[in-house]
Image 1 (spheres, rainbow, N blue to C red):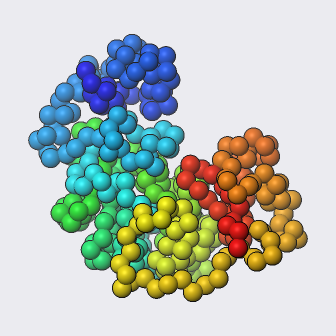
Image 2 (spheres, rainbow, N blue to C red; image 1 turned 180 degrees about the horizontal axis):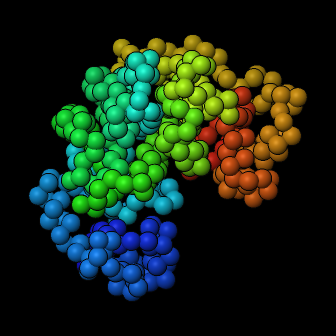
Length: 370
């Protein structure tokens, strides 16, 4: 048995994920030994685990299985807690590691929401960002279509196994994504139909694959807000497109903006928000599409952050612990003794005030010196 086979075997069982596997590996020394010593080696569907069958089916369907043992496993996803033990990928595996932005929203989108999703995704693709979404109806589908219209890369993350594709209405869209250099991916073994558990897991992957998440249109209670909550917990930048204050479909996005999410009106707003998180040159930008920056630095010229009266007491607590090199969210929770959710919200609020920057690895830092 190889490491890849061991990860796929663990993925076929029930009630164990990457955290549990990591604990077993720490005790056993490697993932193969961990599998051999594992007390839970029964398949989710019952009977013995047959990992060889998974690889045979993958070959039959033209699917590549990528595990944490593989160099192709997306780096951002690898850093996230509870990352998938296996990814079933149809299409371009490298697309999963391209700097990306997630576009999320309601299935029952209004014409306004569909139009905004398409335009923003199209603009992001033109700027070189991969557009990641859940291949659902509504906002997800329009986001994928916008990226394709620009000739860009888009990744669809399913809430089912690849051979149990859902929703059927988007099957042709999925084929087009693959044909045009993108990817359709699932963490679920062959035969897993969508259910109430698979979609929250899908949302976690969508949020973990990207640098930031844009909510385009969503009611107050929706899966979209679950995804943005996961994104905030992971230290991803949360953004939202505003809508009519009297529209039910806009209430979720308006609540996000009220609570500190970055208001965005276009792909340019998203690009400006996320560009500081990328090493120079990571995102290809067509020269004809990009204008030289004309706006001054966001940080005030006479101080690294706004005057103290602009902060709440809790925001001041956060700023006292942040430096130019960056401090992790976990460390801020430990130092301030504030709840993790509160620290995330405060950091997002300070980011909107240009008082801090977000770095990869869940780190928060002071703005650049002028």
